[in-house]
Length: 380
Image 1: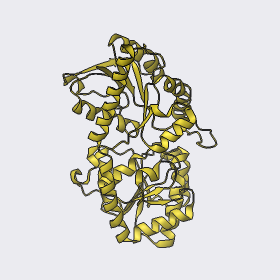
Image 2: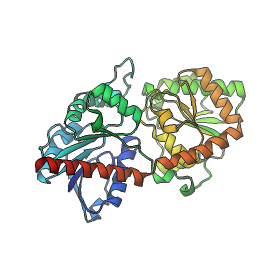
Image 3: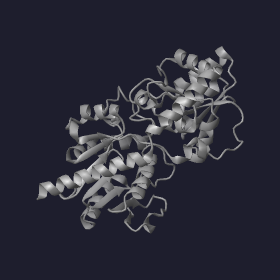
Image 4: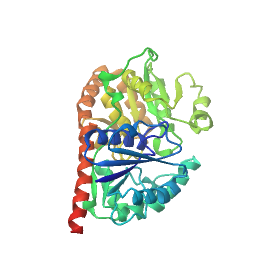
């Protein structure tokens, strides 16, 4: 079987979210499947890989860097030339036109881009807005032609069926995992972060709820006199943001610290040493940081919305993410109650075992086999 995979996200710089999913799943698939031939499609923006040293892997690199052209023109041409039986697109969209003998498999992580602006407000980042428009146009068309759709949570499956109106049996739920660097026993410890701190991920995107997290933290700081600072990771437009202005207006720059984009190895240390992760997003198809924190043994205070309680499990610590008073109360509780911290650490480490990449990769390969066998039966 000839299998093509969109590798752009897997080998992009500064991977998070879809990039992390693609990289780890692809790596595990190639380790588990030596019988099929894989064609990995990249573009000029991708970092160098060592994939071509594998006997059953062919790497194709295009000079196209504009994603719509790459996906809708370059990939179909390659799929025909390489005589693909299956093409797997891992980033919510896929090529609309493939020859009939090439079966399309999509991974759709969520369909927030199909929601109304009232439900999921536009991000301030123009690139994200353009990407949202592209996905709104392409995803429904590609989904209707897909032989199978993989998604990462039962919540997302429900959302996909509702928004795309496709057959239930075409949508398969396979949870995702996280990078092995977050496994607590493998984390290379350093001494950079000795002061107590809470950790969160920030962004201009309103659903990340960063401003409310900051407000809740400052309220908890005043009410409960906690020692922790708040470290914010991933906020790339911090200096021009409303969050930065709010922190400055409240003279809180010494206790609310923007760390920018953090490499996996350093982030693993942050999880290991943080009092807790505050993951209070208002919409997620999965919520990878919850699993990263669980693997690292970091307590999590999480949102009670969308897929997050499903991924976090029934014994997680959940609150209403838009209620500043409840955020403050939860922060005070997690910082002052060491027994609660210990309980959540133990629970997270047990829960993490449900999200191991080798198992998830084998389930994905089975979908490839099932789709291929079904196509062969139909043909003959």
